[in-house]
Image 1 (cartoon, rainbow, N blue to C red):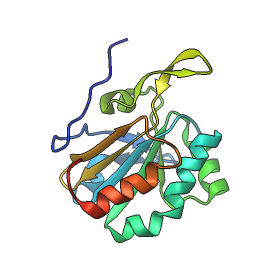
Image 2: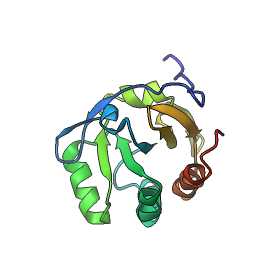
Image 3: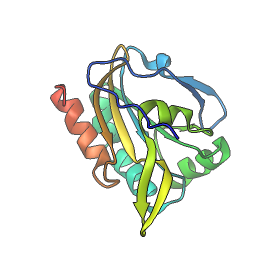
Image 4: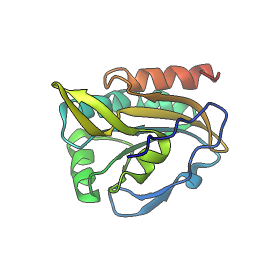
Amino acid sequence: MPRSPRLDPGNWVPEFSAEDEQGRLVSLGDFAERWVLLYFYVADGRPGCEAQALGYRRLFEEIRAQGAVVLAMSADPPASHAAAKARLALPFTLLTDERHAIAQAYGAWGTRMILGETITGVLRSHFVIMPGCRLMEARVGVSASDSAAIALETLQGRAFS
C-alpha cells in the first residue's frame, strides 16, 4: 500500500465531497470562506472516538466563536453517524469516507500498533484549514482527549505550526 501524503502548512488541502449523517452531499468547498476543523476518527461507538467527539462538543461554542466549523469523518455509513450524533448530542457534521480515499489524501491513513499487532487504518488526526482551503495545522496521531483543545489553540493563535 502506498504511503499517505503529508500536507504542509500553507499548501492547498485536497478538495472532497462526502455524505453527511442525513445522506446529503457536503463538500469542503461549501466552507471555502470559513475556518474548518476537520478531524478523522476510527469508528462511531469506540471509546476513544467518542472521547474525541465529546471534546469537540465541549469546545464547540468557542470554536464557533472563532468563525470555524467542525467536520468529523470516518468510514461509518450515514445511518451510524445519525445514531452517534443523536446519542452524543453532537452539534457538528459527521461525514462518511467509506473507501478511505479522503483519509488517504489527507495522510490520515496508515499503520499503527494496537496491542502488539500492526493495523492499517485511520490515524486519529485533525486538520485546521484556513479560509481559501489552505492548511494551517495537521496533527496526525493526535490524542483523542487533546485533539479539540489543540485545534482550538491553533485557531486562537492564527499562526502556522
